[in-house]
Structures are given as C-alpha cells and as structure tokens.
Image (cartoon, rainbow, N blue to C red; front, side, top):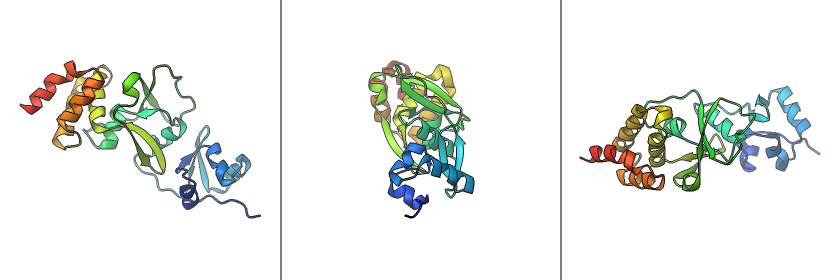
Length: 202
C-alpha cells in the first residue's frame, strides 16, 4: 500500500488548511508517526506545540493569523487584527487580537502572541463572518462590527485609533454609516459612537 503524501492539493481535497493539527490529518490516513517523518524530510514544518504547516505553501502577511485560527478555531479575530485584514486604518499589530466567550478558557499553546478580549450575548455572533486564509477558516468581525468594537474597547486601543477606523471605513465604503449604526445598537455602544457618526454625516 502506498504511503500517504501531503501536498497542497491533497490538503485542499480533504478541506484541511495550510496550517493544521495532527488530528486534522487523520482523514488522510496520516498517523502522528508519519507526520514526524514528513517533518524530518522537510515536507512539513512544525511551528509550535501541536501546529504544523506545509512547507510548499508560500507565506503571506496573514500567516500568523491563520496559524492562530488553526490552534483556536472557536476564537474570533477582532479589533486591530480585523482592521488589518479589512485594510482599514494604518494599524499593524504585532499581536493577534482575539475575542472569546466571557465564560471560555483562554486558549493554550498558541503559536503566536495574542491579546484576548471577552464577548457575550449577541456580540458572539452579530457581524461575525468566516474568511478563508491560506486554506484556514478564520472567524472575524466584519468591517462595521470591527469599527464598533474599536469604540467599545477604546480604553485598550486608544480613541484616536477608533476614530481613524471610523473615518477610513466610511470614506473607503468598507462599511456604511447605517451598518455601523446597527452594529452599535446591537453592541450597546450607540451613545458613545453616535456623536462621531453624526459628525461624519453632517
């Protein structure tokens, strides 16, 4: 019987991203021992505890986010990291900003530095979308929701960052004022962001 091989095509066919955990390869018939063999021969790179990547896949600027999403698939990429993905504003964070349920445990063994914020209720689902990055499904806040979160967490990231995000999102049409308004209502931050929205519309 032929030994299983790992290629981008075989991973894509099995709906496994460029970054993966050992258990993700079980449907391909790849055992942990075989995975270690792939690491030894250079087909696969070990990035951190329990996270691997296919060597042939070209890295890009969102590689770290994809790696973290592999290790913490239930978390939501948010705030400065979401701004970067949506190309809103000028922020270029060195950490990945993640949101988790306020009752959830903080993910362990992550392959990169992260900043954690807590969501609850409607904030866990409203404006949360899924985007594929290097074959990995990444949960993140959409542009309007990201702008609203910047105002909610302005004490963590700075009011100037939130205002820049709002201006750039509206100017570039990444988010409409009506979308931001609705997200602000759901996230109960309308009284804070309202005056800034009105100033933009004036």
